[in-house]
Amino acid sequence: RKKLLINDDILENPEKMERAFNNTNNSPEKDMIREEMKKILEEAIEYLPEDFRTVYLMRDVEEMSVKETAACLSISESNVKIRLFRAKAILKNYLERYLKPEDIFEFGNHRCDAVVEGVMNFILSSAKPV
Image (tube, rainbow, N blue to C red; front, side, top):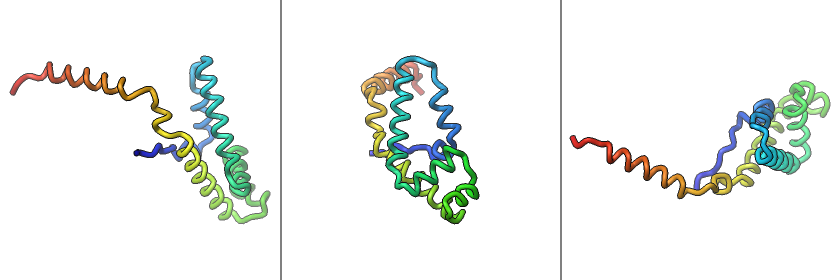
């Protein structure tokens, strides 16, 4: 089975994550999905060990610099970077386990198969013998 890959860029860029949530037409269904995604992300962040969660929130949510974060926590700047890297790795792992591809794409492969069959039939019927 293929693993669902969470785009690292989204974890590193809170603006992109927020845009992804807000860049939808407002419908009750989409609002519900957005709320569910927020809950999943909140759960994932709560799952982080406290040291990693604190750095993640300070850096990526509060948008503090590495220097500011290090000063507030009385740790080195390299430790801030390491904790942030590990926090993102844990978040990615958590989300990959939570969001299985078969759950996301449960619309049914039979629909895809029908489309592929139709396209293949069209191609075969349109093909001229060589």
